[in-house]
Image (cartoon, rainbow, N blue to C red; front, side, top):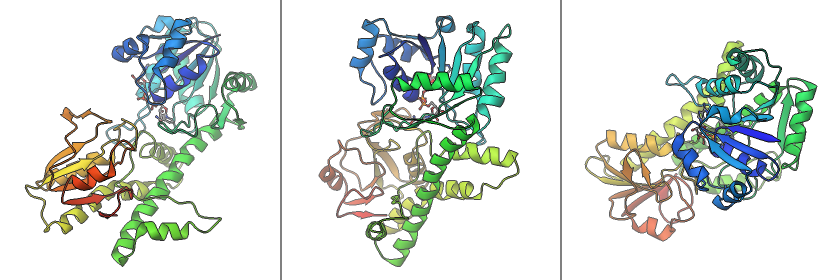
Length: 401
Ligand SMILES: NC(=O)c1ccc[n+]([C@@H]2O[C@H](COP(=O)([O-])OP(=O)(O)OC[C@H]3O[C@@H](n4cnc5c(N)ncnc54)[C@H](O)[C@@H]3O)[C@@H](O)[C@H]2O)c1
């Protein structure tokens, strides 16, 4: 069986690496640089080993391409393209639409199309199927299914194999074929009654995180006002053996999922006249955390940051990955610069970002830790400035949330 995977980023390449063991995989991506790199056997994604790619390439079971024609002989197509927000913070479906165009224009015989991209309930039925049909020159009866991706990049304990996978097809045949596909490389498959349930479940998982992170971020502000430690209080609450799940405060949420997916749910709620008040409030609280952090730092430093050199430590959105999408560091830096601080950042995992390079971890007036990678030594962070503010809860003996 030949599997075409549209999008060779975090999700698409990860699935390619797993699928390569059983199928011939064509990884279609419209970024020529990524495609060239992948065909040279070099992975650009944490968690996907270059050696795995090289093994599949050597066995003739993996090829990356920018040519739509190369997917024309596929029997199964997986969509794994970005689903970001537009400038007005609404679901931006242009990448899914482009993927549908590639499929519609190039695949002439019926195949199984599985969407792994995160999107609102109804996307498979009301957007993907009609879009592929619109771009197909003649009527082709494809099968359609959804299996939302739950991978957490950089995580060691859960991966494609041992994370239970939700799935549902638009027809019974699509559901069965989807189960057959994933059962080759996933331990536990969870069938749900409709694609909309799978799509909504994925959005709710991330909304649950978003709302609880906002709650603990607000709680950190309350405990600080009360003069008690948020971490000690959370640890105390966490001794309850049931009914409590610990989340920890931060400078805000980042990444492609938590700041974005809940807005897809809110948008579809709006269309159906249902409330999404928690989602909107949680978004605001998380976005405002960066200002709260900078306010605290300013208050501790003579009420002015004008001309002070501030080093932001860790600009990736979470530890041990190079991903800076929607990172809270961006807002922290913007607030600092607005107040006249001279800002640099240190993150050797990210390396370069917005045309700037990672600065040395030393010599600043103030250091603010936004993300703590395992590779960064705690003592070096403490020594990097006379005043250190930690938003991660990982650095001992310094100021923090
Ligand atoms: N990264 C995660 O942790 C994660 C987890 C679960 C779900 N998701 C979801 O999976 C989807 C993909 O996310 P990602 O993190 O893999 O994104 P990504 O940005 O890492 O990768 C997307 C890839 O798609 C390519 N691309 C864009 N438009 C294309 C097109 N029309 N045709 C072919 N290739 C195209 C890009 O060049 C890029 O390489 C999103 O919906 C995301 O929300 C991501």
